[in-house]
Length: 150
Image (cartoon, rainbow, N blue to C red; front, top):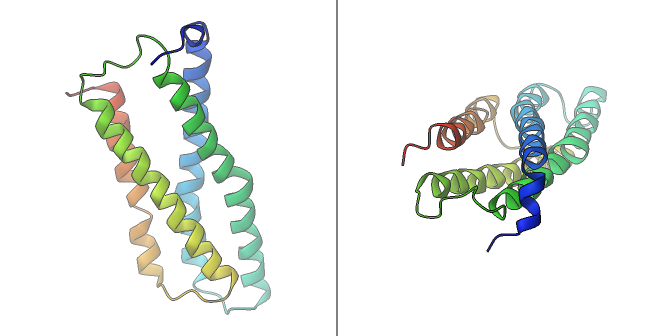
């Protein structure tokens, strides 16, 4: 199913999809770094409370709106006539990676709540490794969209 009216908005929709994706990825790359540094401070300290505010604002004011906008503009692109070749495999892989990225977003929400409740049980090393997950996913996503290998 496509919506013909979306064809006229295609360049704008594509631009806003890329802009929102960049904002989402920037925040997604930064949040685990905040968690790494948050691990170093004593729960309940002034520094810990500052990290809680930073994490809250990043998540609520940038990450969530950017993810919602990315999904919204992406869905509009999918519904735009002539944009998706439904027989091609690249968009299935891209969609899977975007779903995984959204799952990672949800995991960071949970980790943020753990810090908020002074209940973090994960190490700096865990968050350093977790920080690589969105990088790998965005590499696959960009290759699927630009190269369209299959």
